[in-house]
Image (cartoon, rainbow, N blue to C red; front, side, top):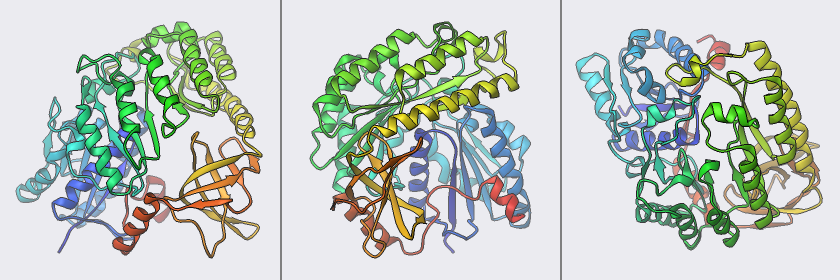
Length: 483
């Protein structure tokens, strides 16, 4: 009988993209994706090591799978990703029933390791210290038929004191521009109309190749691919952000007017301790240049609160920058001590209570800012790439959701009997705003069918019963079910 699988993914977009590769490899090896509501024969955890709660979530979920493994020896469990690269054999020591542990550099080995574990009836641990295959050379099962990720590089040359990723993903390895463009063109031929270029430090692209301005040229070349309607990229580093990238964004209408640029702290003193190699004036200068070139552009960011040594004034500096920058959204995190990073042994570790208080204060402020930023588009028309049904009804009217060009989440009313297709583009009139999304109460003004909508419709016809695309029951769900 054909074996089925599901992948549980933690962490960043790079991990989500790796999960598409893991799924593609398993499908090529003869596995099938598990149907929703079924028990898979294989569970793969694609892990993150950035925060401590990712460790807890993994081991919690592993413990709930232990009884299944005991009663069904043919059931397999694999752990990959950054935590596997970091912890290696200690995973098998804590959870000896895990069949395979594989690292960030050898995703392509997974099918062979699973077969070896089955035949030898013992755990297989294989961690490569350098990249075996560039991820995009591996087969993929894309989560979306109309929107795709494309890696331009892997690894990172930065030495941020809080971050363990460079130790796990390795130094930056750049992909030849021709390979990137070939993949983009192939995806567009398959119906993809939105591409997000990915890299741990995406705008440092070219450093390994010794080519200054390589990322701006790549962005412009990707923008020229016929049929590609939307281009995004993440995450750039302020240190490497150059004016030619802004020019490339402003010069091509299919490069979206949205920039996600991590800040981490608004305090120059903390930025120095983080080894972030820029200061708040440099950061704000980039934002001002982006908004001058593209007045409609929105900015989103990442911020850490409670970094070791952060004083009340340092935190106030972060709040003041958030007010000045007017972020559409800020993904805020409480500092998480990661063994092996310089910050883990720094003096002035912040107590959990103070960290939580600062986190809540920043979150409250950012919600107020986000609400004000979203109010700006009330009364305007926005083009939205349809992503999904919201899954609720207001006043007996169905809604769908999607992203505007400037990355706002938009909920809009539809005719339940004749909704637009997922992957199509709709023009809607925004009627109200909240901190996290905007709403278009009325029906779309215009529905434009796209190649992305065609591709999604074709996939739905071919796929039959709904597979579990990414993910499995979370720890909370397992507890609720009593599994």
